[in-house]
Image (cartoon, rainbow, N blue to C red; front, side):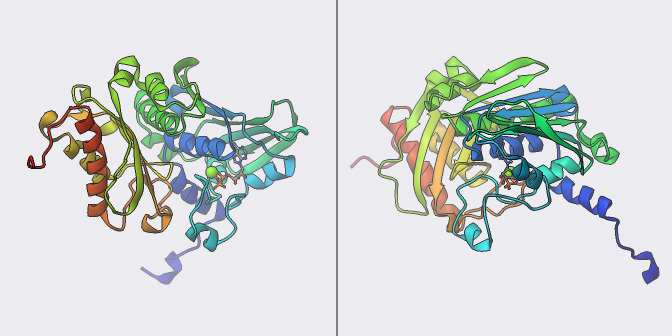
Length: 346
Ligand code: ADP
Ligand code: MG
């Protein structure tokens, strides 16, 4: 091999490779867009997908919307209204997004249309992007808020499109994302539609049990017990709260263990383990309860600057986090008489 074989990639190829880092499948698009809607202070977010999201994805919100010039900037590379510099990041971000790359990346690998109108009044604007090129910006009709529509994800990256799974599998992933945000934000009315049919819709009343009912149904909602986190042992977590199910309401999959760190949906194996361990012998092996658990922690002790696609978080002191979560869930189950005390009787 000679050095002459090393060549610079053309910008278009670089763009598509970079986009693939953010956008892996329809569910990752839905995640980015729903986060944007929640960051925009929406009280209603409706996700609609076609063919598992492979052919079409639309996310509509009633958030603060964008002015025309903001919209044009939003689809450029690394543009965000959420942080200014690395200091903002280190002091902990209050928004779900901050990388400023989602809209740009999505636009690079699909046909993207954003229609938006500022909540403060003013005109609505529609902007279209095709394979990374802005093809039109024009006045449009839209209520205050934003609608983002994606057609033909990866139409220009055939290798990527080929890797997508069956539409039903892609839809399962979309459903998991939409469900998580519905549970994490009981004060936002989150709805999901597939092929025009509603899968679930939360009311946005602010009541967590009601959100659980909307996504998992009445039986599960009624089996939920509240975790107060009162008297939490000392440790890295400032608080632990939410709902866990009666041990008899369980499933053969971990997917109903929804955990949130500082409002962000994450999978943390140490937290899942702690929840399951709290049930002690009340759960058969390979059975898992339902849980919707919110952990809050000093942002400095957890890495939020994780890879955009990565849901797994790591805590600085994993053992201490496990002890705290286990104690909080144990306490909830003990109070309800659903497990027996492990401590020797005094
Ligand atoms: P990030 O969320 O990291 O800032 P994005 O590419 O996802 O990056 O979005 C870029 C910018 O576009 C955001 O910072 C925000 O100002 C604006 N934006 C995106 N989606 C919405 C929306 N649904 N409503 C209002 N503004 C939005
Ligand atoms: Mg974003």
